[in-house]
Image 1 (cartoon, rainbow, N blue to C red):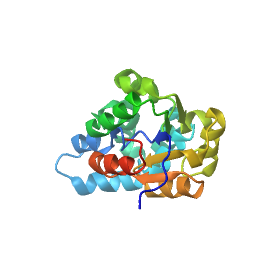
Image 2 (image 1 turned 180 degrees about the vertical axis):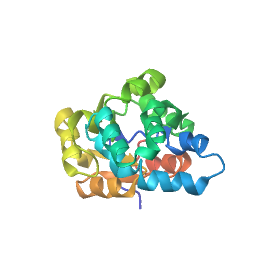
Image 3 (image 1 turned 120 degrees about the horizontal axis):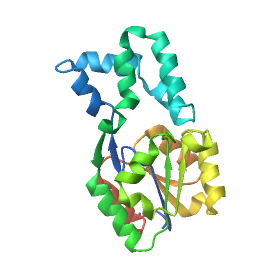
Length: 205
């Protein structure tokens, strides 16, 4: 049975509309050493450390603290933000096509993303489609990171709509679960074709 129709779409950015992955950079820095790269990304420049910058910690502070902890990895740590743009392979074209179709249908579009406020200006310059969002809530600007329910509530309060009227799209299951618990119809993003089918079930496409 089709799910109840929703009228608003909320997108995560990295991994859904934008192909951001530190491996795009670190494969260049660990040539032929996939295991070494994965060890570095798990134990040095890992998700927990990156999320602190996504939550608003200044990049310079985060880098300095990590270099003090791993002085022998200083150059690799510096590369994380010094060459951050190399982690962005480009737009995920199939998802952008879905996004643009929603925009043409006048579906209200919003973004909710874990992203450092210091690096996001690069994305704004590179990806013109970001201008079509009616509102963007960035973790680095508000000091909260998904899956904290407070950042979802802040999105709703700031832009004046209800979770019950919205579908939320994210590639991370814990964020999808958090949105669902708040009343969003949440979709775990895997690929653009699957997303299109799911949005058709919701009568958004």
